[in-house]
Length: 400
Image 1: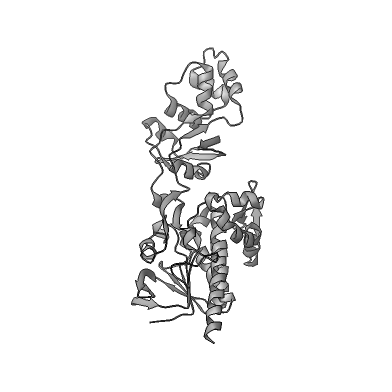
Image 2: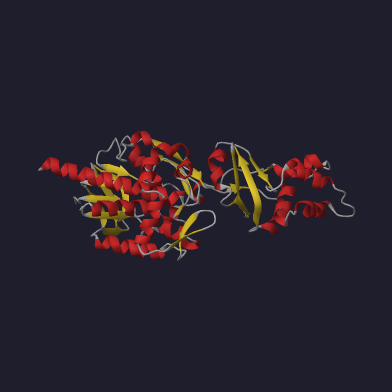
């Protein structure tokens, strides 16, 4: 039985941040990671530009977390967008802010930041053990499958940062849920978040696969989002769709505004103009400047198109999308569900398991893409790491 001073299980952003806080507080930290290398999801997210955070008013930033806003607010106040930027720059990564407020490293990838971070953690004495997969409990110890066989660790304090249940090939498979449940930790069921929609396209849509749909506004439930979608072989995906995932998951219908810069009356007036010898398709293109992708969607979901200009305008402004639901959870960018807030103290300690803390996507929160996901992972990891360090020092003081 090995008894490390501090153990972090999971080497994604939340786990690495928890390890850094524990090490900074003087603890000897072991990080156990199931995969052969660390932070695989971070590296994947950074392949096309690592969106670290978003510059916007703090209240608006917090509102992106929906039902979890009140729980996350103290952590985001302590380590929000400004602090994330300072942290990344402290690792030698110059940043820039795009027109939408999204913040990126100028290198436009995660690997330089991760290398600098791992170097700093090594200097702090953090020990990494890869291919160590948590397997539940051996009595009160944590049991791991390792290249050397089964091992058990009984740490002075532990932070679990095990991820959600999407992108299992990168390490987030949700396998930990039953092991926590059997110890009395309350869990919310996993569900896809930031997910694409399945659509059973007709054959004529194949030539539009890969085409972006813009300008566009999307509506579901009480939300309207101005954004972009992409037509794929599997359905519709893209950043404009992802903020609507909670509403779509709850059964709200999806409608598209194909001309978000025009009001309904203007659309109807333009469609009422004589079209002469123009076909209906060419008339729509000229009157509303509909490109082939938007025109294809209109025909896909509203055929046969009505002759009445006002009826057609209503469809152009609120096109109902016939779909087969969200894509499978493992294809989703992130997941909702996980450890319920009722099972956590303010310091993210598991009430059912004193001395064990949780952080990152394994907690029951969700947010759209755009820097919110990574910021909250870092913020909760930092918060849990600091609380775990305080717990460790408190236990040490009581023992002396």
